[in-house]
Amino acid sequence: MPTLPTIPGSVLVRRGGDTIAEAVSDGCTAGTRFQIASVSKQFTAAAVLLLAERGVLSPDDPIGRRLGGCPPFWQDITLHHLLTHTSGLGHWGDYPMIDPAEQVDPGELLKTFHRVPPLFRPGAGWHYSSPAYVLLAHVVQQAAGRPYRQFLAEEIFTPLGLADTFAGAPGDRTEIARGHDRDGGAVLSWELDVTGMGAGDLWSTTADLATWIDSLLAGRVLGERYRTAMLSEQVPTGGAEDARGYGYGWFAGSVRGHAWFHHSGENPGFRAFDAWVPALDCRIVVLSNSESTDAEALDPLLGLALG
Image 1 (cartoon, helix red, strand yellow):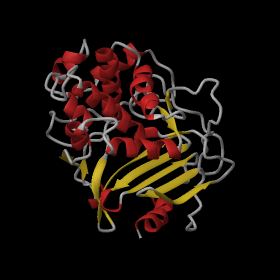
Image 2 (image 1 turned 60 degrees about the horizontal axis):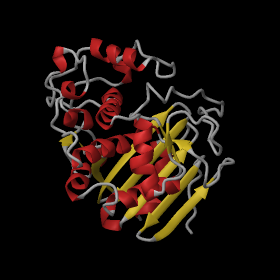
Image 3 (image 1 turned 135 degrees about the horizontal axis):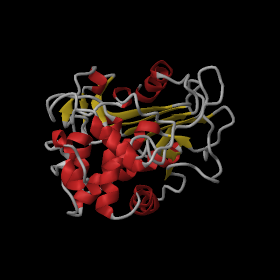
Image 4 (image 1 turned 30 degrees about the horizontal axis):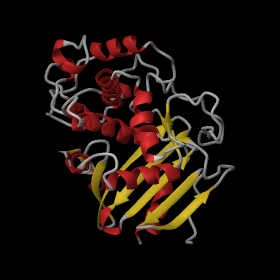
């Protein structure tokens, strides 16, 4: 097996049915669960599309049809806009009154989102927005008639055998990674059950995330229509070639001459990344409990994985 660059945490690379690289470090094991931060958005998107597949809702539904109390200037925002970051809603920095580390009542959080006008009219631009995905998680709860974390567990995690994956605070679960800053100091977690719900609230392992990608590609999560929609460039991001477009919960672009779909995530103390390269049938998963893991640290791994 090739020598991997040293990344605190867990790394897994598969091509076809073969594992070509796997490593754990810094006291972690293959069963250690990490916050996957914004990689969680893939599961949020899948939950919305699963309900769409069942005819419970549609990506074209206005958000106001699904959540009560929305302000008038949200009337043209659809679930599609939220899924693709084209709603005009801001990211966390655009809501300075919200501290993602503090516990807040869900209703109060939504009211805070309501008070900040969109940055642009729906569909007129692209602006990455975690609050948009928090709203989507609330839509799933309302449409499914059960808590978001319960829906994910019953409809995605358990059917796919993702036994080490869960949403929200870990409670008394074991094999939980502790987040660290760049200097190795312990970092307090974000409030995952409310503020991060749908946007960065999941914990998982590299093996479970590889199984997640395989299950998605094999049609065990969504049928062809919505699976294709999820893994297609829905909108341009205006960004670099490796992330020039966004699907539903995935960036789309090309790297080292290959088309790929991927997402990264950053929560305090944690870094996460997963990717699928269709031409090589290559799946890459990196989960780290150190803020020192960045794009520069990932570059040698990509060279190893993609050749």
